[in-house]
Length: 106
Image 1 (cartoon, one colour):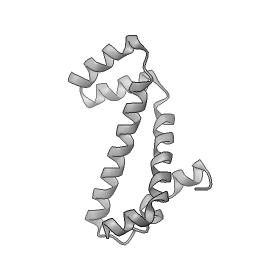
Image 2 (cartoon, one colour):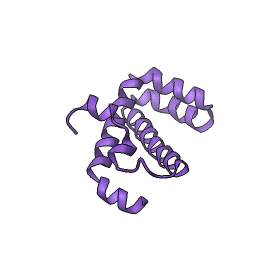
Image 3 (cartoon, helix red, strand yellow):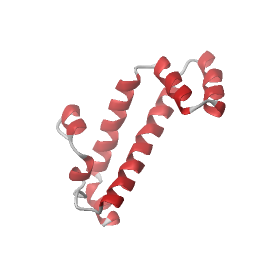
Image 4 (spheres, one colour):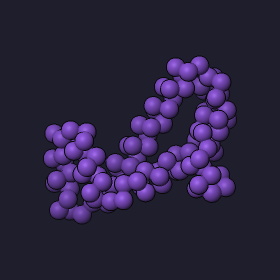
């Protein structure tokens, strides 16, 4: 992809050539992509935590609500920037593998 802003603005289903899938399949695919991005964001933030924050992270992620988990992640990093960067990476990877993905899904 040309640059991060272009990648961010492109609709991933269109980039993958999947815009004509039935709505139900598009939504399921977008949900999987969203889950992948979120997993990467969480992993990246947790990986970069200071030792003293790791115990707090364990506690929040083992018993906290989704709201508490999000608040914790946001308090430890520039959350929006990490989400943006991981979304760009996922889109670039999916675009690079678009032909194979398209063949599997259709």
